[in-house]
Image (spheres, rainbow, N blue to C red):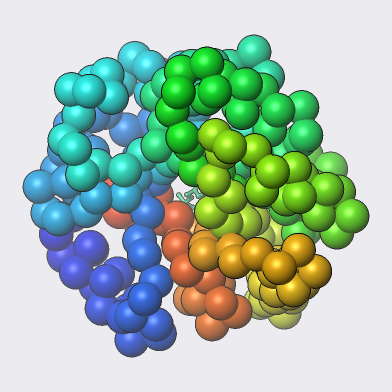
Amino acid sequence: MKQVLDTLHSQINQLNPNVKLMCVSKTHPFKAVESAYNLGERLFGENRVQEVDLKYPKPDKRSKDLELHLIGHLQSNKCKKAVELFDSIDSVDSIKVLNKINNYATNLDKKIDIMLEYNSSMDENKTGFETYEEIKEAALLATSYKYVNLKGLMTIGPLGGNEKQIRSAFKLVREIKEKLENELNIEIQELSMGMSGDYKIAIEEGSTIVRVGTKIFGNRDYSK
Ligand SMILES: *Cc1c(COP(=O)(O)O)cnc(C)c1O
């Protein structure tokens, strides 16, 4: 794992030294998270609330500097747990979920970071806001809420797309970010784009966080 991480970091640094690496540990045991942590990684992504509930120590028992983000679709009945378990919810894809997150965060008196997810590949099977107007409405609401901090936008590139398609999907989300910043007069810090197969293109198109799973932890076994 050390060699893979070293290589990844040097590739990322060459393209843009400000880009952060998120280690996506879904389906892998907590031991794998600890190994990466012991090699210096601090940012982790998981895509299921239930899995994190079973796999990780409770938030107050985790290493203080371990930062855990939810990157998978969040059902509205899991919002409360998600607010309790994660430092950031990067996959906010509806106003309904955004409202629930703010309500639970208010009840818990816990300020939580969020990102809005955009469906940049127009894939029916994927989640995320699908038009600029929708994501703008969500961004406007988010900035009016006291307990959510709009930290960024997230997208999943078109899986199986060619380089041109992938690049234009990432470019689209970067442009949406810039448009939101201008029209709402806000600053959106992060652009979470790029996975094992397309992180280089994502960085070239302005990503600030790449979410890498397979390349670090190996193939996932969903049979268990
Ligand atoms: C699983 C997952 C990743 C990591 O994908 P790899 O191809 O294994 O690097 C990144 N982002 C999201 C949203 C994921 O669900």
